[in-house]
Image 1 (tube, rainbow, N blue to C red):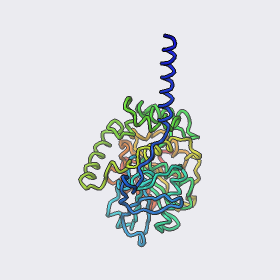
Image 2: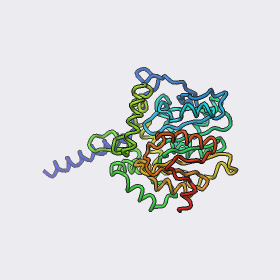
Image 3: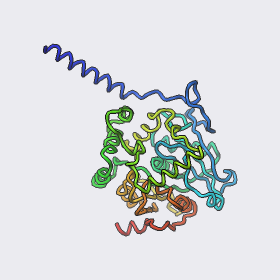
Image 4: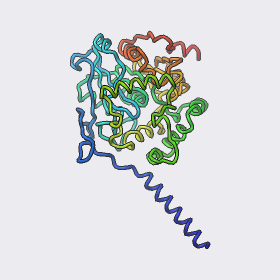
Length: 365
């Protein structure tokens, strides 16, 4: 009987070890353009390491544009999602807009060596391949916020201005005070906390965690109703309805190479231990020749306002705007997208009604 118990224990341990090993092995990505793989339907440029980035152009012709703006899309999204800029503003200012699939998303090749730095150098190579000039503007939305921070750190000499709209935050940034991190982290749904903890402390298990069916995972990662405010949900529901009717956006396209190469890499990079801290980034425009701004909704359930405020307070050269009623869909509120772009390109600091300007925040402490 004892021998059988020992055998059962050994078998159970062996099975657990086998599962753990398999769980940490990343699945092979679906190869774009290969037989049986997703078809490539977007224009692409070839990078120095042989990978390709897919892109989409909007606005005025790049050759005649007064302003050239590159957009980083968010989590589980693609270049097709776009950004809410009115055609009137595009024509008034002469704006060329470049949207691209970040590595592993949509029609852009996966990058097994993807990092904070590679996201910045990817966009630099894209700009050079399309001959956008020595400097260009960058807009990072939600999860696209961390590549924008990477650009500020790694390629500031290429930037004409940067706007971060509800940019994702890392609860383990090197210089983030413990009390700020704890307060913000505690506001998250317990399922989000659990998933983000795995992304930071056990990233090799994140894919297995997202794929398992026994426990409910992060509402934020799943894009579930619980992750949004009522106002967010109304705005996003209407946006998704219009996208379905137009046929412009295919939700499955974001992860067509597999969730490991898209969602998992995104989350593990965001929540990794960064080699730089946003609060130590130097002002890329000491002469006031460009604008860096953060736009945040106070009610945002995905990106916590406490961390955003802390970063803005540590960087007095950043223009911080906070809407007291908005959530994560702040950029899609009426007129806000135009305000973000107008300030980015012209330095216009007139905020929409309800938005708090940087100077107000710094005076309040």
